[in-house]
Image (tube, rainbow, N blue to C red):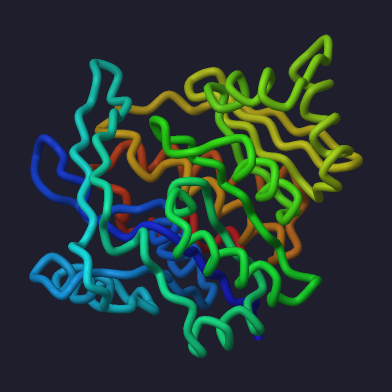
Length: 293
């Protein structure tokens, strides 16, 4: 059986200039893993409200399996505005359902059979969801990929959450802006980007580190390899969800037995395609899906 992919954290509505779109990095990750042929589950919480009903309906329509607990808080929303380059800015509502993902027997059981788990900092801003994420990490199989897609948003993170998450993960995904914010926080003093990434691999015993740099390309570092690829030039609709698709594609390709370079190529091409579409969960073209065969 293929490994089970799980994305856990925020499930919400991105309120974009052209209308509402389903959002949340962990659900985006699970959606794209499913598009690439792997069993996947999005884990979060929604409110007892119409927005929560609609998230469940859309996940069902998109064929995305989910474990969404109903809690006594409103379903999350994010006001997204795009700059001239299509880069999103986020206004994230607080005190919402995904801040309060409960630890249940179903969640514990899911952890025990998960092969790839993706989590970030945002859903750890509240103690309830943070405890559930930590429990999940502690009860996954040791052989699984524990992917920390850091996703720093506004002020919703601190050094303790970042360091403890780095200690719990074995794959780190960051972008160039997040890398610059991590450097002073973690006292990274290498003479180059590669030196700093190698230090992170060493310090936290990582299997891999993914660094995306927007139009300037992307890097994947493992203990023995470094792959760099340029970013394809495409007509950008928006970049929402592109990083999540990159992470899902990279993990899917690695688990399908592809080389680091092949996995990197698929991740770059899928993320570029997502940038040409509105919203974070477009249908993936068959040509990209077939690369894992």
